[in-house]
Length: 210
Image (cartoon, rainbow, N blue to C red; front, top):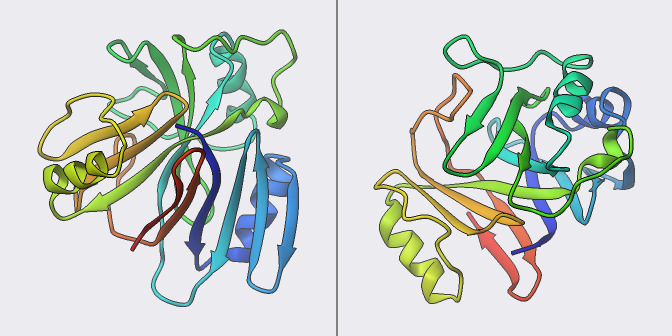
């Protein structure tokens, strides 16, 4: 599943743009009154300004599967890495992946993940252009299993069986991380909340989550 466009809300539009453009040096490919768009590999990631609350999300960027150490060093030079039980990286044995986390100025929980099952190794020095796509977006619901069954009924597939509070839907190119409201986000001190998400998924069209 490939996310071609991802649209999220933010109450921190200006600091968020400055952070991605200046600190991480991710290219801003479009901007206007109340929005800006970033190029994350094959994905266009857009933040739209809102005055309703303080939206925050969990999302992940795929990186070359052989460049986790380089990516972590690149990131640690720019931000403070999130920690979990004294560790600043995750080794997902069952997913065959390594990941590192940080929070941006809007409180979004952002993950760089090297998925070793994917054939995307690179010999280029790691930089913002090494971010390959948005590969995960958290979708928060009060009832996870029934919502996942709705997604399956729309032609999507569960990647793993998961649990009553967590089910990944899609594949390693693009996953909906469906979690129960108020579940603590991994590598963060925040509980999941429900905020609007709009996706353009290759082969599936527009998916709207409110």
